[in-house]
Image (cartoon, rainbow, N blue to C red):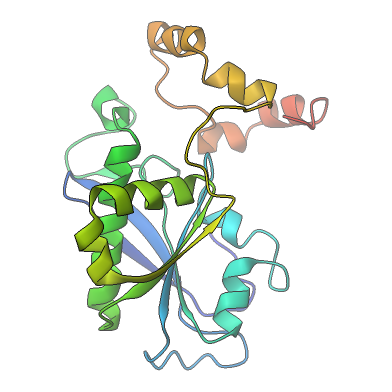
Length: 217
């Protein structure tokens, strides 16, 4: 259960053109005015990696960007890109048994963005929305704008990038460097590992064992 700290919220499902079923959340109005009259400008917030929409509300009612938007009369929509624990569904593929489910890249995330934008505009009746990307969410949006410029120009009035990433050179975090190393990727493939930091793992005792002695991780 997602805690929206007293804000009105809705849960929606979006299906992409290649069959991924995404769960997205909506905060239609602020705490003080919960009318949600449908006249508020929609804003799509794109989370970072390896995160979910939770990262956009985790600081609570007084410290989360999404709630600040809602309190300033925006209609806030929080995407969950394919593969995170809110979007582990597909029309034909099983993430537990079908490796093909995990065979996607940043270009495939463009389909997540397109399907979600189309869904929001259909739900709200607006012709355009605002997109806000955070880290990886900015990367996906930049790629979307580069690969489908006319499509997004018709539907997006403004893009705001927070810590936007366009390339991975210069990373200094040793854990990220280890995860993106070719040898690590080959090892994951050899071991048949398709998913890391799954919800089951995040809720496990192992997470405490790792994070308490290694807070930097």
